[in-house]
Image 1 (cartoon, one colour):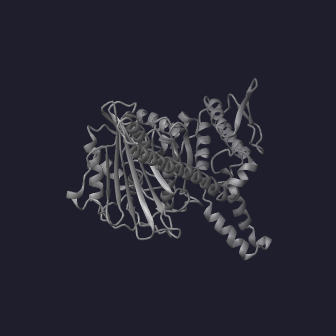
Image 2: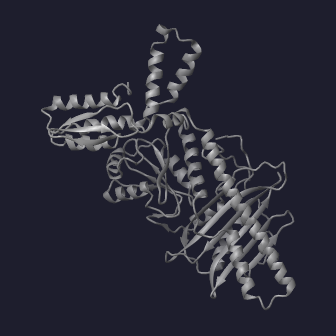
Image 3: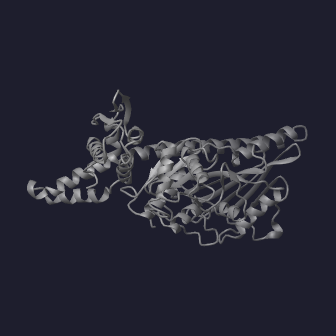
Length: 514
């Protein structure tokens, strides 16, 4: 997909190809840096980490920092290589109590457009999970000249290399990988989907949950889902539900907060679903939907709190330890140089924190500016009885207006605008789900009272019982809805059908699907 942004990014996920990569700069992308952290299997010694970095850079077509092996010295607790082109590679390790606690690298690659592509990776070993380490990777594009155009970085190829070499550890209930988790239609899988929905499945990475529209059928095809998981490997887990019947059971388990009907949800650890996306105005085709979901998940992981160390933290800890350990051995000049290095590191940390604050402010501003008419109306109208209700009602009004265009003498321009709006407002899948749920809830006269009450409780009503009937009244924020009376013992099937139609009319959804 061409988006008008074409940065040269050696940090991209295609480390063996040319440097020219076109990346998405659409909704969901408000970052000048990309950061992630995830568990990896425990390493034996520093050599394993160094070997991964060396393998990554030797596999690229742009790096020359390791072209002269006889001049390369990567031993010791610090190493600094610099090529004639200005490319730099630094290593730093932190040992406490005689054992390796953390090791990291920083790679700077200057391009011919006045920018530096920086990739940092720090592996921390003193993690709470036995047998696992934690790696944090950050990449960014830095302008070295005032007229340089900063571009958004992509996932570093180093992450792909780590996952290809089976370094991925266990993140809560899920393994870190770049392939989708295809859920089976089992109770265990249902519990896993529930945990992913409420944010209890993982600790370090978000979960992208792909809901089904049928049996082994989604709005994205299998190859697109696999590509999404590949792009988000080490950034987010991709979990795919097996069928739409699975959605119904998950809905009951989560109280209706799950993604279903083809919706793709992004769930944050400890928080649950924070964003949902589906085909529509924002993402009119599957490719646009893929870009939006990928960028949303990447943004989320970049902004999430961290447990691992970044390069500045590693530098700070290592310099502090060196100063305390060698205090009596260092000369005045050496101590002065050490303090100056600490000051430089602290300045970098301040710049990094300012960037994070700026990035969050820009994201919030962009989201405010990007507010749709429906978002603005939502603040005035209150809550929807189902996701997409307001859009469906606008669609109905637009279609009704167009159907009477000749009678009312509607002008051609208005007809064109309304026609585009109608085409861009497809029926919400949640409407069909609600209509089907009402049919299921009014099938059995023995269960109709409990099932209909439970269903409507998820769609804006609360129970207010009396002697012979169950009276349901709208919750606060659902203006325009009337009370609904549910008999405890309906007479026959005709009575059940009439009850269902009455509920549909009260909810105002009978005409929406026409």
